[in-house]
Image (cartoon, rainbow, N blue to C red; front, side, top):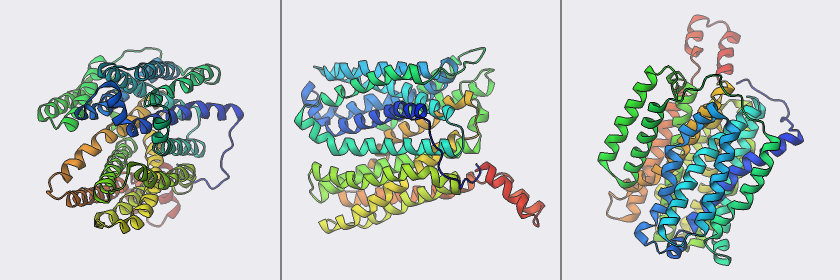
Length: 473
């Protein structure tokens, strides 16, 4: 990516409406996810689901959302991005109605599974429509920055207003709120967005689809339920998927794409970004409520107010990438996320610790969202339009899988200690270490391939050595 120091690109009225529709879909899903998390106890009580079953309200959504995102992202390339996006929104509206009217655990969990499928269909399709509508460079960087800002804003708004909404109306409002927004999206999309061009010959890679989806589901289930047999099955299926893709004439995921440094290291960075931040939020929530004794409302405010920094980060991240390159911005954003978590490792049981928690969250959220935008730009850059569904499917899958497995992994680390505060400190220490080590790996993994060779071959030519670095970033 070349350095761009010009003024930010301007959007036409039609482009603004396209942004409203596509970014609005992601915003709606993030608000709904956040509100429903706040309302979990009320939801469970409303349908007769016991305390032990509450985690499955989240897991029933997370398993299909994470396991099928890659598959649906590729299907969007093969059968039409707009078609898959609209199908996902229709399914989301129906699933939300089912959840809102649920009268027993079976109806509720079925609705959550269908919402997970809808997310797996709509999110990568919407993101690939964005990356193909707006050309690679400053314009796309700015759009993806808006996407990061609205996703983060959705989580923040959901956390801030979720408790109030549920208290004034009902937990059912967390489901019903999706329906009118979905209807508006369904009405506007056909007039604003044209269907993507389909390949001449479509041969779905059924063995690849079955093995990768089954492998992802098994691995995610293994992490959630701490099941070793499921983990073994998942690893074997993913290994089989890799072998199938190497030999398939029409692979679901061409191995050459997975081997691209931007795809490989961009998605690795995204996995670390989401895994570590999701776990940090969970562990800090435990600290605030169980160690400091704060109420859920106060905890929501402590997270919500610094969360506004994440919205600002999304708005300016695209400009930072245009000026400094995605590699630098990704490394700095990830470093800020990790270093902002470091002070939390040393907190005690006195409420004076809030003077450290709030600024640390403010700074950390800013770095977190900056890194999200940078990894999305990195993971989708340099690929032709006909493979953008696959690229956005990979980045979306990375996000969904990371959000799902982050809490179980670091919760297990915390559980190794007898004293709860000591366990939280240990898990946060692992969080910081993994994040900072990953910064180094990503920095060298994304290093332009010709950098070292050029420096050795023509040490006297500064211009020659500079060009590859700029183009590959």
